[in-house]
Amino acid sequence: MIEAFVIKLLLAGLVFFGVLNLAGLHTWVERKQSALMQDRIGANRASILGFRFLGLFHLIADAIKMFTKEDFIPAGADKLLHALAPFLSLFFALAAFATIPFGDQLSWAGRTINLQVVNINVGLLYIFAMLSMGAYGVILAGFASRNNYAILGGLRAVSQMLSYEIALGISIVGVIMVYGTMDLQELVRAQGRNAAGWIPLWGILTQPLAFFVFLTAALAQTKRAPFDLPEAESEIIGYFVEYSGMKFGMFFLTDFIETIMVACLATTLFFGGWQVPYLNPDGFHFPWGGFFSVSNLTYVLLGIAGFTCKVVSFCWLFMTIRWTLPRFRYDQLMRLGWRRLFPLSVANILVTGFILILKKGTN
Image (cartoon, rainbow, N blue to C red):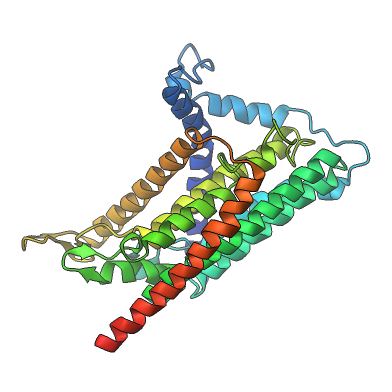
């Protein structure tokens, strides 16, 4: 019992260490990628002993600045809620990663280790519950600041998050119908077992419409451009306008962590998760009849590497979208969610159900 707890604790530490470091690296990637797209240099000033390493030392400089900057609380603000809001946003964003499977089962020292912090059969519901709870941090940040502009920013943020949560949740119902499970680990395995010839039937092939609806709604959930209406300085002051120091840093970090969560979900639901084409637990089975045996450790490491590459690719895509598309107007944002994505997600369920009934009737 104690040994199993220690293993789960190590897995949790590994996941959170990877997520937090990738989120920190995102701040550098955002500067460098936007600079590349805009034909400029980007972050390159921070140095140690004259070495700059492509501006990577800016991560250290940002951390020092956040921790040492004055923690200002406005007069009249609710001090408890003001301090609690950024913690809630960051905590629930990190807690959502507990059910993300980043690899298959690892056989080690006579034990079988499932590479997932918490394995529950309703993992999808758990993730959406955690992401929904993050809305409390946003609205509390606006309310506790006792700033009218912050309250308006919080209301705008929550209305956006709740509106797109509906389309987001409905879009994945088709995936659940096709693979018959809400257990994310089993869902990944099902995408590998189901194959049309030698083409693995990943979610992107069985639910292409759901993928695009999910991706759009999930990006709106992160409140990042072109869906950054809650923080649009040209229109309204953001819900964390009265925050400074590391409290502001926690809100800032939460946006990047939610972006990574969206990338993990897109990978898990629609791109086979840790599945690598033609790779089975015993080795590679190629379409032309070839076979290449691998050990269990190699199989698991290749799966983790495949999952990581997919997630990083999605993060790159999201960053490209952020620095390509202009910000929506608020009426356009709401119209897209309620009059475009919501009907499409419902239609996808109906079409998926009809196809599954026809398939069942022909068998």
